[in-house]
Length: 109
Image 1: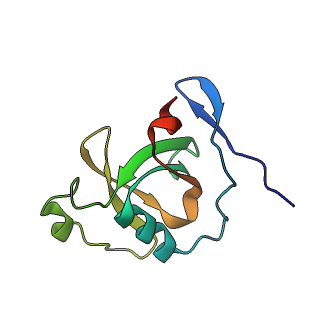
Image 2: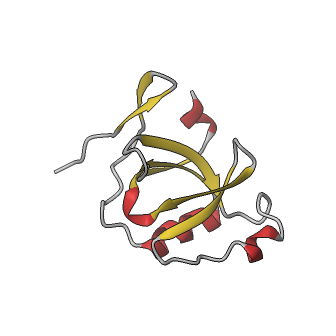
């Protein structure tokens, strides 16, 4: 049985990301591995207000400088990542991730 592509609200527009939904039980190691290998659009639920957010982020060395060593994961359930658009550190909870889509020029269109 194929999973439906997720709907994502971006700037008050709805678009569909290609591909299957990420398992809601994706392991933290899998999320970290993906972010170390490329740029990803992560869809997650914000804990403070229950809103759904989208962030283009990575842990690639070309984006992350020596700050990476200072940004230790202090809690197992929270991951600090480099937000490509804001050019700053942001974080999300592993259990709040709804979907991940590898960033490409096609993703932007």
